[in-house]
Length: 166
Length: 226
Image 1: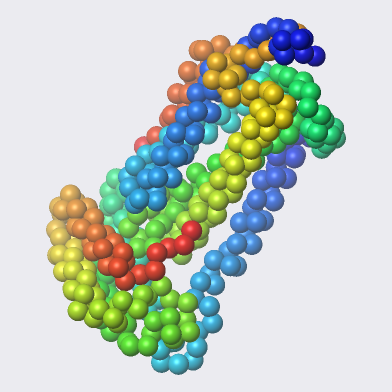
Image 2: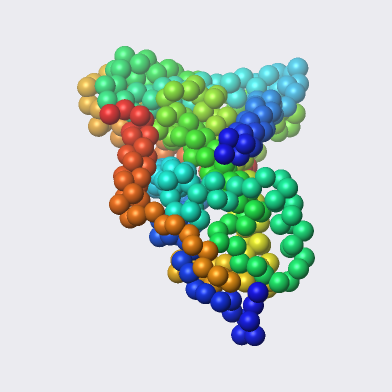
C-alpha cells in the first residue's frame, strides 16, 4: 500500500515541478522592451492595466467576504477611477505591435480613434459612478456597479484587444 | 476464454452506481463548464466547477471507501505489472479484467490528477480584468491569480489530451479486441470467465461520502467561510 502511495506522491511532485517551471514562462508575456518612447509607453500601459485589474480585484475580494472592508473598497474605487481618467494617455501613436512589444492592443485603437475614445469614456463613466457608490453603504449598488464596470471593460476588449490565447 | 458465441461465461456486477454516476456526470459537467467558460458565462462556469469539485472529492474518497473495483488499491499497479499488461495489447484476444486494467488504472490516476489541478487552479484564478475570479482568489494577489488562470488553461489542455487518449483506448478495445467497455459503465455489469467476486459498498456509505463531498464543495464555494 505505502509503495503505491509513494508512486502517487511522486506523480504529484512531478506535476508540481512542471507547474513551477511554467512560472518562469508566464511572466515573460511582453518580451524584451525596446528602449524607445513607444516601447516604454506600451510597457507602462501594460503595468497600468495590471494596476487597474488589481484595483478591481481588491474590490471583488472584499465583496466575497461576509463583512467587506468599506475603506478598501472606497480606496480602490478611487484608484480605478483615477487610472481610468488617465487611460487616453496610455495609447500614444506607435505604441501598438509596431513598438516591438508583444502588446495585445489592436491597430483598431488608432484606426478608429473616435470609437475607441467612446469606449474609454464608457469606462470612465462607470468608474466615476463606482467611486461614488463606493462611498455609500449600499452593498447591492456597489456590486451592481462592479458588474457594470466589468461590462465596460468587456465591450471595449471585444473590439480593441487581441483575444486571450489559451 | 471466449466460447463460440464470443461471450464469456458469467455476467457479473462490475462498476457500482456511484462510480458510474461520477463518470457520466463529470463528462456532462466538464463539457458544460468548458462551454460556459469559453462563452463568458462565468457564474455557470463556477457552479459547474463546484459540482466537479464535489464529484472529485467523492471519487477520491470512494477510491478508499468504495466497492472493490473503485478502490485505488485494486487497480493501481506497479511498473512491472503495467509493462506485462502492455505486452498483451497486440493480442486480439480480450481477457476481461474485473476492474481497471493496469494501464487503465494509470489513465484514471492521470485524469484525476489533471482534474485536481484543474479544480484547484480554478479556485484561485483571476481574469485579466480582475473582475471574474474563483472563490479563493482573495487569498492571492493579482499576478498570482493570473498565474493560476494560466495553469487552469494548461491543465485543461492536459485534460483534453487525456480524454482523447481515453476515448482512443475505448475505441481500440471495441474495434481491435471486440470488447465493449462503454456498456458496463452504463449498466454496471460485464461478462467474465468466472464470477470475479467483487465486493460492493452499501448505498448508505455512498450517501454519507456524498454528503461530506457536497459539504466540501459548498464550503469551498463560500470561500471556506462558514
